[in-house]
Length: 558
Ligand SMILES: Cc1cc2nc3c(=O)[nH]c(=O)nc-3n(C[C@H](O)[C@H](O)[C@H](O)COP(=O)(O)OP(=O)(O)OC[C@H]3O[C@@H](n4cnc5c(N)ncnc54)[C@H](O)[C@@H]3O)c2cc1C
Ligand code: SF4
Image (cartoon, rainbow, N blue to C red; front, top):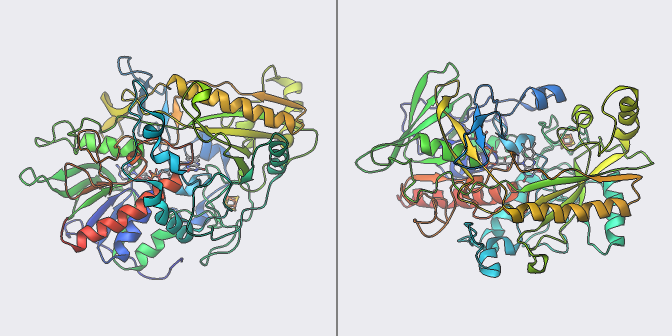
């Protein structure tokens, strides 16, 4: 699959290209590859740098505490308030994503869950939920299935189907990753409790595949780039294929601030961006596909307001930025007598989907999955900040604290819960009215408050996670506090997909209802949140959108 050695294209901003793709992440890399291999000329504008795999480091301080490869709140600040009527404050919350070529696919944990069939049709199964935008998707699992398969086989995914999985047309291309100590304990305990553990599907190579190396189990997976190229990031998979066509240029350090529209025709004609020297450039284009993620895509549309689109580009529905969803996340921790050495290898190796579906008998809407995973990197573990805490009433200073860390780091694991988030109109991305970023652009403002059912779902799953750790024989097991969400890495729903232009921003092919040659394809298209691990669905949607955009282009429709 990997193609190298071919020259990538170089275009000048004044050249009229077929497509500008904004953002080179999980979705953008795939869209670029699909369009370039279909014969279109493509410029991908990526705000972050391009790093090659030998440049990735195992430096927890730099990557987790100094924003090594993620968006930097100093240069691109955000403001947050729980509700729209409260004053949003800088630093009070954070939407985090990887800011480099490959985007989140470079540093993600690579849990690669397909949606289940129910995810697309929940509103008609469960009925509407008052005060929310809970709705069916305009497409079904069957519509997306061929693209899930394509993603798994083009990118490289290791796994084996689980008992609750939706039907698939083809097996995974690679066998599951080896089970970790946490996976063995989780699997045995879950079975004793009558549950159905399965290997975690991972976008990581368990064996050499497509000219790439298998995982070397370095342990620096969550939040890091893979120097072996074994994580199936778009950086090592589809982007080289796009470049090898000679029709695709990836242009890093190119921060897009506006999509230009011909006021007369209402068509997108160009993209204004800052180059590495912060000098404004304008790339001419026949069409635009925005793949800047669920936070930055709506921000860019709102920054692109014009006389014709005074409320923001493609925002006739008023829904650009609204219905922000995160996926709930909470953990239970367990420390064992024996060494687990969870700092080795991939993050998680076993999971359950027994509680995936919502069940009205629980008294609230929601569901999710639980996986067995490592307890964090050393600094995060010690500070109790990145993944979880050390449990209640534990020493936090002095000799006892040192002893606790020494004894527990290699003996601790987490059972992590990944859950639904309901779409609420008040949970939204907008532009801060006063704060600007380093380029003089309006800072991202977001509001977010968990629906009571989302919190109830997290507590429900967490109780199950704790029971598994206790059944596994943890000498000490605890549930970390379930706090209101103010931080997220799953950025979903802010330009939702639908057939009705009054209630959605993009149609079933990711084309905006308002602008014929403008497409949005990333986490922003989600109608409901799924249960965590959205990237598999984001990438399947990207393959589907790419195929259709190429067809529209062939028919002269864009
Ligand atoms: C630590 C961590 C672990 C994760 N683990 C998992 C996991 O295990 N499973 C899972 O499913 N998901 C995981 N995720 C989430 C996953 O990374 C995202 O769901 C996925 O990357 C989103 O894809 P996207 O295409 O929507 O956006 P991204 O991958 O975020 O791509 C957007 C790209 O656009 C660029 N961009 C944004 N604005 C502009 C602009 N104005 N101009 C130019 N470029 C711009 C960004 O720099 C970025 O490169 C994780 C995320 C984090 C942070
Ligand atoms: S654990 Fe494997 S896939 Fe993850 S970064 Fe290390 S070598 Fe790469």
